[in-house]
Length: 128
Image 1 (cartoon, rainbow, N blue to C red):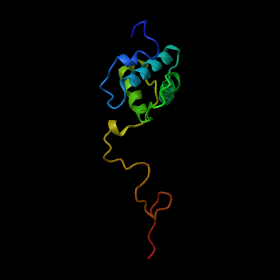
Image 2 (image 1 turned 90 degrees about the vertical axis):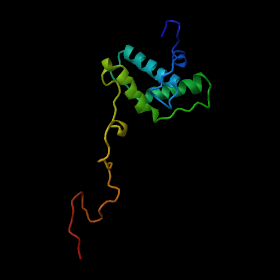
Image 3 (image 1 turned 180 degrees about the horizontal axis):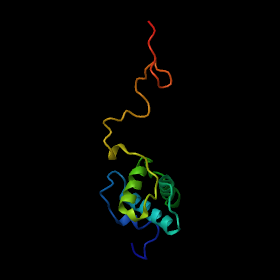
Image 4 (image 1 turned 90 degrees about the horizontal axis):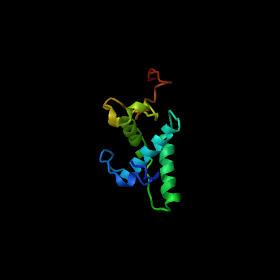
């Protein structure tokens, strides 16, 4: 980044293949806004708020009503940012990701087929 770059021109010049499916300009704008927040003294912030700010930029500032910004990009960009800037610690709060863990034994928060005879998580004897 140079002194001649404004807030939103930086990302349009740089490509990053590590976040496939997310426009490189969005990734780098996410990084630039995140670093700006760090520079203003924030130790933690909302990755979703930054993505919404990017959406505002394209829709309102740029007048691009057709710009699409998928909310599912947020966790991937937050993790990418924290991997790229480990000195910032956990700037974003993240949850477990199936992409980063072996999920073969994970059935989710609810049983797919709950036992109709179970009472508050306890098994009961079936009446005959």
